[in-house]
Image 1 (cartoon, rainbow, N blue to C red):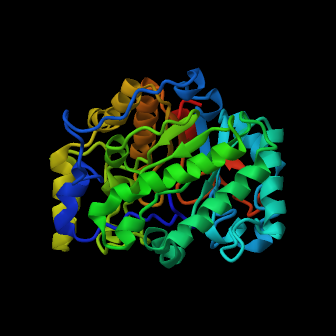
Image 2: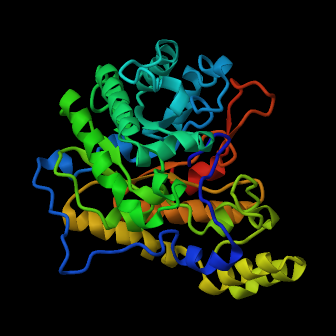
Length: 403
């Protein structure tokens, strides 16, 4: 989600905003009314609205080609044995986050970094050789927020980014449309970086330019698109469809953050590191002991709000259903290629229940999914001996995911 070492980019500013955050991480979004322009139903071939089976069940391979990843591990962090484990576990694809500094050369955006390209290409081949599809996404680290801010402010920066995607599509189209999928941008939020939250719509027409550029290179490969505001649902469903075939619409889902990111130190908020053992589902009764234990007023308030809302499978279903209804109405495929729970402080039975609930909702609405992540802070794989070839999968997580 944005992450190197799982760098969550949800910038939750103050505890006073907790209630708004809990009801939706997309609060304040303008939804067009009946008199405003609506997206047109897709009139393209059937591939425009049927989710490719390859994208039904995925896992994110974090920390490999992200900006903070070690170049010493580009060649061997994941091996054929890892991909065999993923395939055997029942997953159908891997999502590989590609940081800004891996392939993109801003001074020469039409040419991919030749050294790193060899490593990324090898990674894609290992996955496809194992019978897995690959979703490749542009996944900049927050360390490059200054650069990403320029996409909003500087047309030349956007032009360079378009040329980058042209180069990516040109090279990787050698893999079949059933093997590789292109995701334009992970959790775009340049309007927020520029303190222009009311300008979130800026991204949609810019993204269209990238989509059209990729289409000039390949007419068959699917393109995954998402909205500003960290790929949230409300921004997505307030946009018009792209009149381009083989587009898959994407959102990310980590609600409620009080549960999924409890104890997370990387979130720009002082409260979250204080939250441990937060239960799911939530009730006023089961959060009461935690409220009593903490002396931090803001933490008390955020826990009280979390308990009073009553997060459970029905609540989550109602949120995700908004995206499903939109996709169904306009006959477009939908995917959520990030969801999960930071596992260090979450009660294990509750984490498993959450994963089961969210995955079941995705299945109910025919939404493709990818859990964050494989062997990181949200993952299901460990290496007890320290040997990365000694792969131990947590079967309880796989069971929760229905695998």
